Image 1: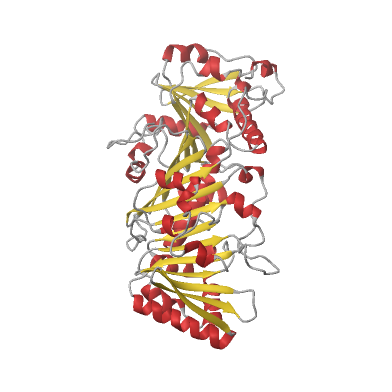
Image 2: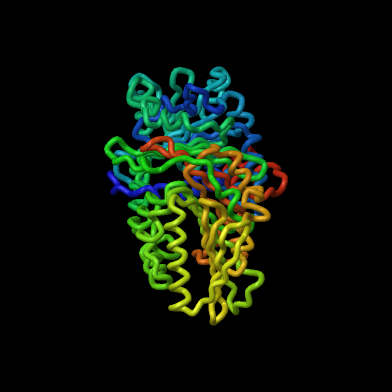
Length: 550
């Protein structure tokens, strides 16, 4: 499947959304920092190279318990139930317990792969579990004969013995030991045979050069989860939608921190795709110093030209936004007489940061409305000043605004106040090459000449900065908690009403350009510190093995 080409903004923003969802997936169930040599996740030398999705999970119980401690009581309950369901399906149903039967011989990671299904049936994929064997003798003891309630039927494929296992609950799995080094379980015969073919020298993920190159970008020390997604084929198999970023592949790793999840990722284009990122650059951002810590939503970019072109052309992305790029351009022209492409874009040469701020505390509007702030580096101050003068003339002559001019630290500032009341705007200069525009009574005090407390004073945003490269191509930050409190006062669609999403406090994503075909992402998902964890709930199976659940 080949998805139509999409421009950089759709790639950047929609992949940021994908990262957030991927981080949430890690939170709900879904190696060392790599040196100059790539250390592949466990089992990728056996996973066929046509895998749609792979998830490599740590077997360190302490890491999973650290994750269980995060979140709200509702989300923790859902996460625990998720773990219990998979524990019961894979272990309890077969008569096994993790601590006594699996932990003594299994390696530090296991990999779960979803392969395209070749035959007909309801499921479009087959699931394969690849587990390294750290202690072959103990593994052989456990795998020597079926447990109570299960039955085994043996067969051979390529000289490898396969056990077809039927569990007490009626599910059937295929199982094999490869070279006394790997235990492989699959949901169907085709899946386990594909892994055996890879083990015998067939095409595997270890030979995917694009995957290995992207993997070098991940520097997570001890990952809870590592993920690979063949985006076009996975979208076709799982979602059947074209509304996905035009990227060929994604790798990601999630690590548990004391206050949330650290997610690193890299994406790449296919060899047949046109390069998208040649006009995007990494710079040291002004955003952390220029927007206040009260900012609820922030989006910044070091490459406004490519970003705006993408926003203008991406119809599927515009469908997700509160207002489309076309409507924004038309509204700007109707209200101010300014043409964005001709009057503003030519002098917006550097970083541009957009922020949504809470409603004014000093305004007397009947309906409180959020405030907007735009801060930008400019290449031509004279052209920018002419644009602001044009704005003043239009607002005075057409809408009877009053213009109040002043200076802040020797830089000119203009405040525009509606004759009819209720609307206030401001624009001016924060330095010789940084200008601003704001809507709201408190915007000027919030950002000029600089915020009393910048956004980096927000602990979650500072954590994002600590996790990210010093130079980047842009930031995305959303204070979910405050946005929920201010719902109805900010131009933002309603948030999902679900315990899993409600557990998220803030989301931050940094984007960096690797080369003209590859991007890197660093994300921090802040979660509340919850209760101390105890044993998982009893298993959900009505079988004789219930007493063995942990």
